[in-house]
Amino acid sequence: MKNRVLNNHLLRPLLVVIGVIIIVLVVRQLYVPGDFGIHVPGYTYGWYREGNIEDWKQVTVKYQGREYCANCHTTEVDLISTSPHAIIQCENCHGPGVGHPPDPPKLVIDKSRELCLRCHSELQYPSNPRSAIKGIDPVAHNPNVECVTCHNPHKPTIPGA
Amino acid sequence: MSSTGPESFSRREPGSISRRDFLKKTAIVAAGALIPLAALEILSPARAQALVDDAATGPLHWVFLVDTYKCVGCGFCVKACKLENEVPYETEATRTWVERYVLTKDGGFHADSPEGARDGFITPKIKIGPGEYQDIKPEDIAKAYFVPKLCNQCNLPPCVQVCPVGATYKAPDGVVLVDRTWCIGCGYCIMACPYGARFFHPKYRTAEKCNFCYHRLAKGLSPACVQACPFGARQIGNLNDPNDPVAKVITTERIAVLKSEYGTKPQVFYLGLDQEVR
Image 1 (cartoon, helix red, strand yellow):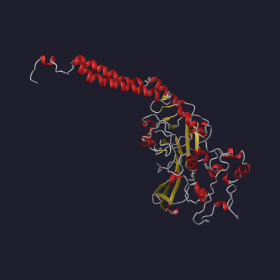
Image 2 (cartoon, chains in turn red, cyan):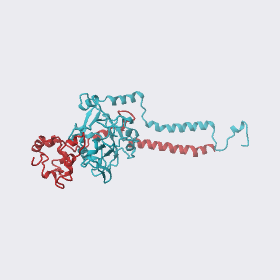
Image 3 (tube, rainbow over the protein chains, first blue to last red):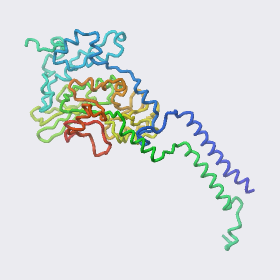
């Protein structure tokens, strides 16, 4: 009598609990990668899958930098290098050069007024270098005309000056 | 409870349990409950301390320097960041952004960051809501400046501490990374960051943040925002290299960090940070 009661009410649920625990441990062993654990800098901030660091390092670089462009486009790079726009990276206007060439064969140039206005829309801010950049009021200064119609971004000069 | 006296202790009802059996069962249950603990790694205090020491003395510790005196609010950094790191361009989500602060002579305070300054600041009007702008007369302005912001790669990152699954962590070189394959998208880290530097990636549906362009650092390149900035307002360096120009500025000049009162030990340092900046 006593044993039957124990079997029904204690041992069976206990077996179920132990079974669940074993299943969880097995699944954990199979699912959690081997390199997951505590690494530098310790438990609080260093509990992670170590392989992820390598995953991030493998991400493709999109912006190649001026030196990459200069490998072929020497004329343009030489021209802009002597102008006040020498500080601006080619890809800021031409877009990221990843894959070019051959894919894409041509980069899409952003010739919009908005691109030039990033710096040349006049903001009269005391003690900010923005006010030292030659600026225009985009509403008054030849609205709806692309800046490159009159200005050469590789050798920016004021027409007629 | 009709009977009292010593015999009532020895007489047991059907289904009741003796003291001996009770203790036996208790021992079994306790032992069973201990089984999951076997899955945990037990760290000796010496090993835990060694892990912390390694982090402090590693050869590489990436830090960022923002010179707010140089920023003109062109937003080329934000554009480059979004394209480099494939953060959908048309959304407001961004890993880095630029804030504009305009303080007027009557003590007024205005700040905005339209679309995170993805397209720069091309109007003197301050954005105060969707499609709503406020005019400020140039003659009323006492001072105005731009403050680029990004993840601070804190030395004591609250975002990492709250992650329930170990999907975000501090790499040995100081950069806080997110493991997209491991992130469950619970959003605790986004709530925990006092700087608002984290967001949900609209495409990957995981937590996302600036990681100093970790893939570019690995190849010896600067982060995309550093390269795109025409004015040198953004710089990256290795704090553990005494000859590093950025490390020299941070160790020898007067610098500030954002929200130091939170005790997170930010690793993005600012030159010319005004008291109004939060």
